[in-house]
Image 1 (tube, one colour):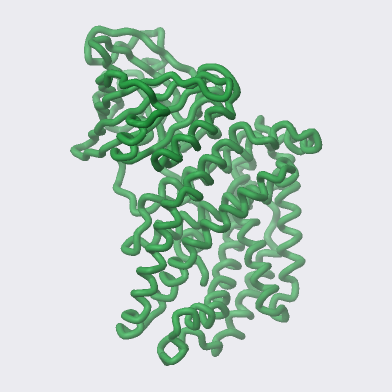
Image 2: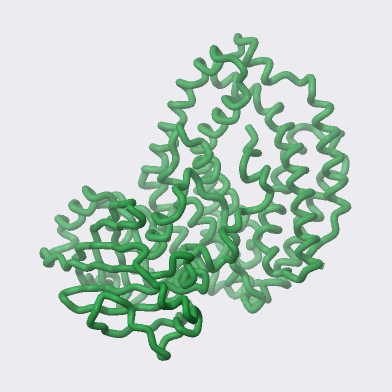
Length: 512
């Protein structure tokens, strides 16, 4: 069944607020090579703390961290977070640019010991220059109280600090329990960090965490979300193709992990957006194949396909359910839908899915593709040059494949639909690189034609795949169900899709 709602109908990822910097938990860099954050349940924390791997019983350290901003979020809009961290009676004020992980980018950061519980602002830090008179309006916006336990482990020739944090975050009257595991590489090979994460997951279930405590706070403080659409990917012209791959793939990973805990049969859009994230990730692995050139990328793509397929069973039934017109048919579909969601949740909770996320994080941070001699030319290519070549290649494929769309068999039209989706994702990924006024207008028109093409082909795909879903449910005897698979409108849908393809073929390339 088609996934045309939300992502396909909107055409472009949501843009949060007036500027990208106003979304402080949007990743501005890839997963780090020297630090890894993992989320876990309280019972999993107890299992880890009591395991032989974490010998000894360190005394919990109370830590309270308070974040400050103006009521209008001016500091976050400028790309900074400001907090005061209190531990053992000492207070440390920290100002930093959030999002980009440590170890890969040099971040501006200001730290100073202070005596009180209010920020100390002077000309040694950029806050007065950034905010002007608004600096006097800084006030607490959220706070985190944790009890931290620390271990230092020697593994695979590396020294790794492990921090187990359990506590509560409060923001605007809301509360959230947080339990996380931080692994920091002190010395030695970075691969040891990810090897330890897999070993720890064998003791208690761990999930890759892509939000730091500031990101969690802003998420808690913002509007309650039932799903998360793809956020714009921050690309700049000075990046190489390898840099842009990390940025894009990390954004896809983040979108998936934000939607994963929201997946429930009462919230069908979360499963849809989780699948969108996995499809975008697989598209990125395909688009950047000249940069990667290793067997690991193919394995990760296949594992991502497996996980998306497990979610797809539930999504198929959501789409079919939305088209039902009788209560009797809904009643027959609902048990199968409930079972499909149970299978999806079981897949997400499986060690296979958890390790996939850690494998992806490791691949982005230290994957073998970064040292492939055969890929060096593509990897080091200016990202705008790489983007133009990739978009040309994908556009030619969609134009050629759909040239006689009305005469193609269903299977061939399905391939054109998949190619169009990959082109659309690539256009969304790379559009920020072509931000000149005329190019932005062309990009909007180009994406509009792709949206229209996908919408028409999605409706056609619904019609073509409905019989298979209905047969799988054993509903062939239900006239209301078989009516959903009728082909009375198939010719009209094919003609509409062919017209949309013609409009797409005429759209100007915004990257040329």
